[in-house]
Amino acid sequence: MNKRLLFLLIFLVLSFFYVFSCTTIAVSKGFSKTGDVLLGKNRDLSPDSAQILIFKPEKKYKKGENVKLQFIEIPQVSLTYSFYGFKSLDDEHKNREEWRWGNGMGVNEFGVAVADNDAASWWKYEGDESKKLHDNDVVRLILERCKTAYEGVLLIDKLLKDYFIEIPEMYTIADKNEVWIVETCYKFWVAIRVKTFEVRANRFEIKYPDLPDNSGRFNLKLEKLIKFLKEKKRYVEEGGKFSFRKSMCDYFSKENIHYNDIRYNFALSTLKKVKKISVKDIKEVLRSHFENYVYTLPDGKKILPFNPLSPPHCQIPGAVIEENPTRTICYSKTVGSMIVEIDGRNVEKSVMWCLFSKPCLNFYFPIFPILNSVELPESLKIADSKFSSGSFWWICERFVRLLDNNYKKNLLLRSKFIRGRNKIEKIFEKRVSNALKSRNFRRRASETFLRCFKDVINFVKKFTSKIKGDKRDISPVCTKKSFETCDR
Image 1 (tube, helix red, strand yellow):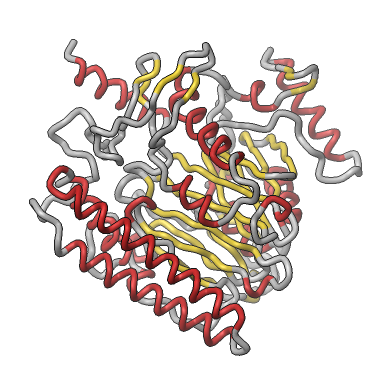
Image 2 (cartoon, one colour; image 1 turned 90 degrees about the vertical axis):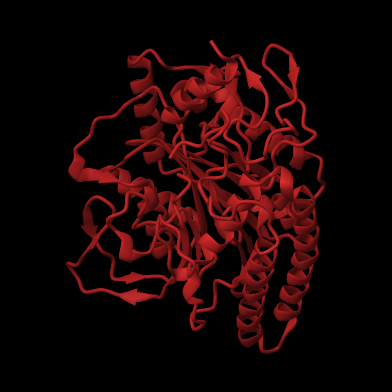
């Protein structure tokens, strides 16, 4: 069989099992350079899942009201908190498959930041459809209802008493003091409190769960989970203790090695080299295609996952491990990125760094979660799964697609863009620092956000006009003429 055809078939099979994904990094305040809790995430979805940034103000509700989620309605609370969040498509396009009621990531007025990652498990739960939650529903409900990360853990526990989450899922929940990671599998869940820093790809990683409190009720839940696993003959230990990750998934399957283990270990090994982790360090990981990284397989063999001869966003960008092509952290299905700095001294001065489309070829610009009066630019609030010149996401995504679909003709332009972007991002950091020191912080924060946002649009449009080649083809990043074809 033709080698390229074989690679394409492998890719299509893998795409069926791993349609969506994400990469998340959480850093405790003791391990960050500024002493602030950090949470970063790349959001990966289908290539045309255009993103908007939404702001939802605080709102009161009458007793007995319900809220309609992605699939079902549940009782509404009396008060929801304000938040900023990334969302797929605007509400004018609810009929599109990519539309979501919930959010993939965001931060609220109390500095509670949330990110979620899909996972995979051998267990397939068939629950009552009238009790089914979308994973993004849970993110939004935490943002709307929780003042601390710990409250987020308790909310997930409460939701799973009456409902179940559509797919196995992981939630990273941060506040000014701490970070919790909750790994859920339909009705079951376990959690850990992050002591240093943690990375999540799309594989369960909790070995030994932490109990949120000593009341005994969480002990009972853990005992119930262990009993279930033993009945299914799936109970596994590590180091003589129960291991959630190895019990709930095939941890070292071929698919997990190529799809998750490389991302997980690359991010861990990269961040371990840093004494104190900064926003800049997280940016570098979230922009990575595994350049200059050597990966060691479980059997001791070493490979280079990155292939410099391939366009860096291709679905099959590098080495093939046991007939499974690798995927990178920044890749063709990355639709947005977020890094939140949660100020431990004054949560009002927390910063949310937002990026639309692919991190390696776009900008992180700042917005301040405390701002509830700034009017978001219209282009940030509109997005369809089809191209729109008025959508900020599509402006950024079109630039990436044109650059990659005309890859060899624009290598120099790509390098110039990255150098210029890096310089401008340093200017953004200085503006944020000055705003945070200002006596009139709210006014300066609003001005800083709008000024940085305008600079991003102007810079991206300027470089888009310089691209050589066919500017009509904005099909998803990978060229259709090669085996690196994107699935639609």
